[in-house]
Each structure stands twice: as structure tokens, then as C-alpha cells.
Length: 387
View (tube, one colour):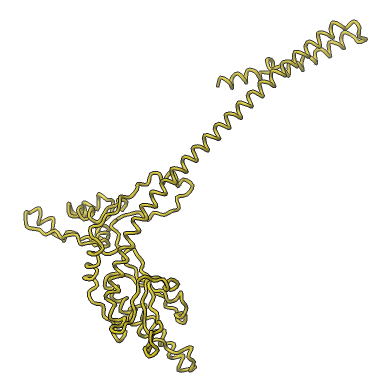
């Protein structure tokens, strides 16, 4: 679909006429149009809607639900990109500045709606069911268990049978399952023996168009008598020391009891990131268009400078040719005058008339050869000047 719509625009369109008619106008199939609507959470008329409406029977138009947190409000938008090639300035000059982003909900309303979407996130005591990514780690644990029974080395000891690592994985499993119910995609490393490395501890849930990175790590207890605490912090493993949003085991409630609030905050953070991204993108487009204008002005100035230099060089060349032709004419006339002077003094020379005439003819030919009036160079120069 080459045309770009907002969710509201496409919603109004598909409820204004049958899907096949709308799809034909957009140059796509009605199946493809239905997929676009489903992806954007836009309800479409059910089968028989238009027949009932044409027959004057009562029909129900399903209201457009609010946009999912961080989901795009645009359908059919081009992928875009920053690589515009050598003509980027010319192309970018035609790019329209996006309108100032506006949103139907304030962030407080977004949080309230997110809480309804999330419901209650419960952390089970067993991996039943297990998210596919968690299931991979559990399968690897089974392999380690077999290696441990064979080699009796702590290197092969299972990680998720007991202790803080089991709690950690149970929390991850609960968040991943809850996110999956909302249609969000999770990601984390499932390396068999690399989970201890910092970069292998990064976890991410993709919500709409935003990626919420977080870590879940044990921290030292405030009291020596207490067990290790779990701490969940937004951001990557390398940034966890500066995390401004985090939750941890407390004296009265554990991390497992805070998962609902955590997932709600993930949705809110994703929406905030999406909104900030739209604002930054608009600012980037404005700045890039200014860069394009400056680049086009620089190119125009460079073209004009080269044109001036070429004109000046051609003018200098014309003057040089003019002076050269004038000099050639002067030399030709000098040769002719010299021949005539020699002819007057022929009687004083010990040469024959034939010898003199032979030399005089050669000299006259040389004079004609360099004479611009004779060899046509002056005609060429006049033609170039008038052309």
C-alpha cells in the first residue's frame, strides 16, 4: 500500500464503503487491506454489513479502540532511511515536515489503560507453562544435569533447580508470558554457558515500536542475616548502575509481588519512548531540511563560481588569440615589407632575378600562411565572438 493513513483515517475509510471497493482504490487486495487493519487494531465491518445497511436494516459500527501503547498511528508508512545517495539534498527538500505530534490520551490515561490491559501478573512456583525462550534454558539445564551426573564438576551443575537463579528465571518467565498475552515479543540470550557474562544478561520486551531493555540481578542484602535480593532495573546490563527505574525485594514484599506494576510501567515507558521518538524525528526532519537547503545553496554557489571562472578563462583565451592574430598579421606585413625592400635593392646583390623571385615567392607564402586574413583564423575568431 503506497498511501499512508492514520488509524482514524483508515478506520473511516473502511467503514465508508465495502472492503473490496476500498482495496481496489488503494491498488491492493481486500485480504491485504484486512491484514493492515488487523495489524493496526482497526475493526472492519463484518460479513453482510453492507447488505443489511443497503436493505435499511439496523447495523452496528464497532468503535475504533485506542492505539496500543507504542504502536504506530500510521499505516502504510514507508520504511525510509538516512541513505539518500548523492542527491540526498534534492530529495530531502521535497520531504514534508511531519505535523506536531498530538495524542488523544495523556500519560495518566495511558497508565490506567495499561493497567487494565495487563490485569494481574502472577509468578508461579514452577515453569508451567514455560515461555519458549525459558524452555530453551530449561532444556539446556537438563543437558547440564546429565553432564553433571557423568563428570561431577560444578561447571556442569544445573542452574535453575534452586536458589536465586531459579527465582530469576521464574520472574522472567512470568513477565514473558504476560507480555506474550498482550502480543509483545520478548528476547534474551539463550547461550548454554554464557549467562554469567554481562552482555548475556540483557533482556528485552518489544512493545509496539519500542524496545524496553531490563536486567534482573541479585544484589547484596542490607543485612548480613538476610538472603540475596533480586533487583529488576530498566536499561542494559552496562547501564544498570545508572538505572532510574528499578524494583527489588523489600522487607514486606518480594519482586514477584511487583510484576504487575513492572509490566504496566514497561507499557507506559514504551509509549513515552514512542512519543519522544515522534518529536525527535520531527526535529530531525526540520534540521535535515535545513541542511539540505544549505547544501543546495552551497552547490548553487559552487556552480556559479565555476561558471564565472570558465567565462573568465574563455575571455582570457579570446584576448590571447586576438593578440596572437594581431601579432601574426604584423609579422606577415613585416615579411611583405621586407621582400619589397629587398626587391628595391636587387641590383646591388650578386644573385639572379630567378633566384630572388624563388626566395620572394617562398617568403610571400610564409607571410600568407601566418596572416589571419589569409588563413581564416580571423574569420573563425569573429564567428566565435558573434556566436
